[in-house]
Each structure stands twice: as structure tokens, then as C-alpha cells.
Length: 320
Ligand code: DGY
Image (cartoon, protein in one colour):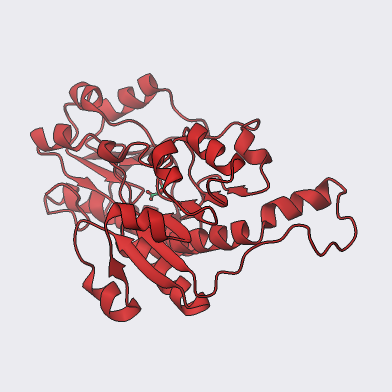
């Protein structure tokens, strides 16, 4: 069987595949392949280890009838049209758990960065605008005892809530389809409906899987229901929020600040007006960018590939 890896991954995963003597084609260029080039290579392979956001839609599956499995180098699987994979009995695997700490670290970092306007203050120095000590300028907010609202309390949301509780004694509320008993027991987290989450969160952080039903759920209407001191954090997927509406909310005192590791669309353009706001911190989708997380992701993805080759069930399968 032949495996195509569309972008180089950490050695930890490559070694596992090489030890098995698997025939690997790794995209030799640093360039992103065009869709045509990508599909042409996938057509010649049995398994795809996919890095990035290639749209693996019905058209892709139709054009690649020989594929027997897809191992994603991500925990999110919104890039794959799962019904198309299901109808062809193609397993799709992801990389859960190994990036929960790193991604929640970034959510936590953004929360504090927004609360203390750190990106903006850094820019002030770069712009030669340090100025003199001003008791009234550049004030932030303290997070002690505030309420964290988690939209989607799974593995990453749990770790974010744990950090907020431990560091700032924050109260935890969350909105999920079902109870997270662990979070309720360990963190005294309370399950609330979506309207309550909007109304009561001082910090609202998204940690759900993206799906079309949640497209731009955070928009003019929902921002209007949030507290005017609230901080909006999105480290999940940019499509959860409407960017124009977020800009409006941030510039009209509807919410207090926003921290984004994901944007809508990605990559964000250099002249995006959000980047010039003092109350907005943006990172270029680096939630899982630690050695530890990326090594873990490489191992999970390789294990998923090996399972397909050996005719076994993927250890981290999202569609079976
Ligand atoms: C993930 O793992 O889903 C990250 O967002 C990288 O795409």
C-alpha cells in the first residue's frame, strides 16, 4: 500500500511509518499543492495523511476512488465531508488529546493578553509610544473570581476551565449537548443553556467541534447578548464567528475584547482592521504548535495510517 503525506510531519510519526516499511510519498516542496496536483497524487495512493485544510469533499472522494483511509494531522475534522467518507466505508482518523494542553494554553494566553492589552502595549513600544506613566491609560481587567463560559466542554475546554479555576478561581459555566460529569465534580462547572452562557460569561471561550450548524453562531445578535465587559476567545475554528460583526462589537463597546487563534477566513490579511484594535489579540492558528503536541499528533496520525494498512480499526477514528 502507498501512503501520501502532503506536508512533512515530525520525525516521531515518520519513524513509525518507516519501521513498518510503508511506501511513503511526502510532498517534497515547501509549496502548498494546488487542488489539481493534490488530487492527482491522492489518486495514486491508498492512504492520505493530510496536513492542513484541504477540502476533502464529495468531489474529492469521487476523484480518488482508490483511497482506503484518511489520517488527519489535526483534532478537527471539519475539512472532511464525513457522509462521503461513510458512504464509501473510508475511515477518517484525527489526533485527539495530544494537543489539548497546548491549545488550551493558547486560549488561556489569549484571555490574559486581551485582559491586559498585551499585544497593543507591545505595539506601543514598537511605535515609539511608551510615553510617561499614566494612571488612567491602558487599563486592563483582572480575572479573579470572574465567570468563564465554555462553549463545548470536551477535552480542550476542560483543560482551559481547569487552568482558569486554578489560576484565578474563576466560576465555570458551560454549554454542551450533555453533562460533563468530570467538570461538574472537579471544577464545580454548571451546564447552562446558550442564552445564559452569553448573558453570564465574563470570558466566553469556544472549544467545540465546528460543524455547519454552528456557522457564524457568534454574530451581531449573539454579541449583543454578551456583557459589555466580556472577552471573546476563539481557538477552535474561525467560522464560529462573523468577522465583521466581531469588529462592530469591539468598536462599539458591545463586548470588551477578543482573542483569536483562528480567523474567518484564514489566513487573515495583513490589513485586516481587527489587527489595528487595542482590544483584539490575533495569533496565526498556532494552538497546537508545541514540540510535544506536534510529536503527539504525528504519532497518532501514523498509528491511524498503520491501522488501515494492517486492516485494523483506526485507534482514533471519527466515523465508525
Ligand atoms: C486542529 O488540530 O484541529 C488544529 O486546529 C489544527 O488544524
